[in-house]
Amino acid sequence: MLSAIEFARQESFQRLIFVILEMTPSIADCIEKQLLHVVFQPIGTLSSGEILGYEALIRGPEGSALECPSALFDQAQRENCMVQLERFAGRLSVGTFAKAQLPGKLFLNFSAEAIREIVSCEDDVRAFLGAMQFPVERIVIELTEQADPRPLSSLVASLRIMREAGAKFALDDYGTGNANLGLWIALRPDYIKIDRSIVDGVARSAFLLQVLRHLHGLAKVEHTKLIAEGIETVEDLMVCRDIGITYAQGFILGKPSAVPPVALQAKALAVVRADSIAVFPEAVRLAPRAFSASRLLISAPSVSPETRNNDVLDIFTRHPRLHALAVVKDGRPLGMINRRNFADAYSLPYHRELYGKKSCMEFANESPVVVEKSATLEQLEHLLTAQDQRYLADGLVIVEQGQYVGIATGEDLVRAVTEVRIEAARYANPLTFLPGNMPIDAHIKRLVESEAPFHACYCDLNSFKPFNDVYGYWQGDEMLKLSATTLAKACDPQKDFLGHVGGDDFLILFQSDDWESRIRAAMKKFDENAVQLYKPADIEAGGIQSEDRHGNLCFYGFVSIAVGVVPVRQGAGVDADTIATLAAAAKREAKRSERNFYVCNEPLKNNLRT
Image (spheres, one colour):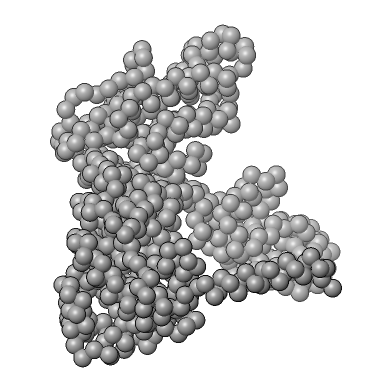
C-alpha cells in the first residue's frame, strides 16, 4: 500500500508528464507553423584550410522537448511522418543556406526511404531540386545510418537518378549501424563520413590509427573522399591531416550555428598551416596476439597409466624423433615420460625384467608442465624464469580446455620466445617500451618527406658499462628506465618523438621550438637522480672503481647523459640514413666534450654519408 504522501507524489509526477506531452507540438504543427530551424556545421579541407561546405542540421522549436534532433525524429517516428519531416527539413535547409549566401556544398541528411520517395514522387528529380532554386551541383545527399537501407537495388537506382541530376552522394557515420563496407561497395559514394567513434582519440590509439589508415587506403583505390567526423582536439586533427584524410568536421573546426563562420576556427587553421607533423601512437609489439602455444604444438601419441613399460619402449622405437610421451587418463595429462631418461634407466641390468610389465608411471614425471593451447607469449615466458627447469628436457604438455592435444619441446619454446623478442625489439624496446629502430626510421622518413624542420638529438649514457658491471644488470636496467622516463618528460608527446635505439642509446626528434631548454633541463634532472642509484660509499667517493676494456682498474664518475644534436632545417634535402649517421657522429663529439653537449652546425647535404 502506498502512503498518502507517496500517492500524491506519484499523481503529481503523472500529471507533470501529461502536461509535458500536451505541451509538445506535433510534427505537423512544427511544419505548418514554421517552428523548425536549421543550423550549419562547416566541413574543412585539411590540405588548405578552405571550407568544403556545411552540413545542415534540423532543430525543433527552441525551448521545447523537441529541440534536440533525436527527440524530434523520435516523435516523427511515433507519428509515422519521418519522410515528411525529412523532405521539409531539406527544403528549409536549402532555402536558409541560399539566403545566408554560404560558400561551398550543402550536405543534406536523408534516409533511404526518403530518397526512394523523392525519386518515385517526382518525374524529374532536377525539377524537385530545382524548385528550391539552388544549384544541384552544390548539393550532397547524405544517407543517414539509423534506418535499414535495404533493399539496396532500389536505393542504388534512386541514387543514380539523383546523381544524373547533378547531386553528389555521401555515406554518413561510417563504422556504425548499417554503414559498413558492404554498403560502401554497393553504393560507391563520393564521400565517406567516418564516425567519431573511429576518429575520437586517434592521436592516442595505435589501433584507431591503423583503422583510419586502412580506410584511407580503400578510399584512394575507390577515388572516394573521406570526411573525419567529430574531431574535437588539435591532436586528433593533426593525425588525420598527416594520414591524408581529405576533409574534417567537428567542434575544433566550427560548431553548428544558425549563422556559421565562412572560415575555420583559428585552432584548426593553425594545424593545417603548421610545419610540424604529428607523432603517431606506436603499437608496442612485444607480445603479438597472434602468438600462442599452438605454434609449438606437436601432435604425438599418448599412453594411459596402465600402459606397460615394454609398450612404452615399442612406441619410442616406432617414433625415433619423439622426445617424450604424455601419460593421459580421460583426456587429462597425469605425467610425462622423458625419452632419454627412460632409455637410460631401461638399459640398466635387469631393469627390463623388473619393470617391463609394470605401469609406465614408474618412469614418469608426475608434475609435468601443462599449458593451454591458447597460452600467450607472456604466459610462456614465465616458464623460462621458473625454478623448475625440467621442461627443457621433458618439454611441455599442451591441452585445450584441459584436454590433451599434444606436446612441445623446451627447445622450440626457447627458440620461439627468442625470435619473437628479437622481432619485437625492432618495434619497441622490451625494457623501456619506447619505440625501436623501425618506428624511429619511419618517423624520420615522415619528417623528411614533409620537409618539417626538426632537431635530431642522439642521447647516450656516460660510464654506463662500468656501473652495469659493478652493480649488476638489474640496477643497470633501473638506470636505463630512469633515462627513458627523464627524456620522455622533456618531450611534447604531440610534437616530439622519443625512441630507444638500443642499449643505453636514445634518439629524440624534436619539433618543439624550445628543444634546447627541454633537453638541457632533462640532462640536469637525470644527473641529479642518477646519483641516487649508487651506494652511499660510492656517492661519497664520487664514483666507482671498475675495469676498463683492457682489464685495467679505473675510476669512473657518476653516470650522465651526453647529447649530440643535428639541426635539420626545412627543405634540407637529406635522407633518413644521413640524419641517423650524423646524429651518431654528433653523439660521439658530445661524449668528448666537457659539457656532454654538441651541436652539428654544418649544412646538411644529401650526399653526406660516413
